[in-house]
Image 1: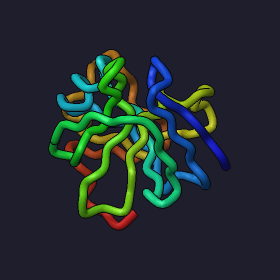
Image 2 (image 1 turned 90 degrees about the horizontal axis):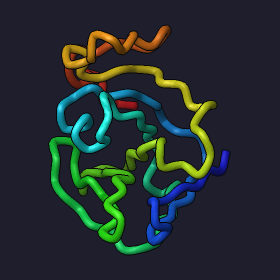
Image 3 (image 1 turned 60 degrees about the vertical axis):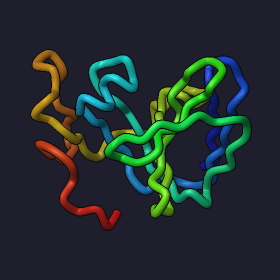
Length: 133
């Protein structure tokens, strides 16, 4: 699988090679504010599978360094300095992320009551306890 995406103005671009390790949804306050929506929809890939181009801005959150385009402000991805994984905001893909189904949901204690849980997705009241995959 090859996917590509970028920011709204086109200054930051990325390419992904291979399948994601996992795909999820997060309802925490940080993700809600970062996405500007009720939740964040993301995929995790090995960092070695991602090719990035363009200048990035960064701010620190509980998940690590959140990377964004300093020109248009689009939030794109995050990674912790000690991790070999990158979290891609799936709304930034060039095409719709229809084939990437969430396998789990995080921070469901903060899910809006009008957002239904994803059928077949593991439900975590807060963070995932198993961080091996």
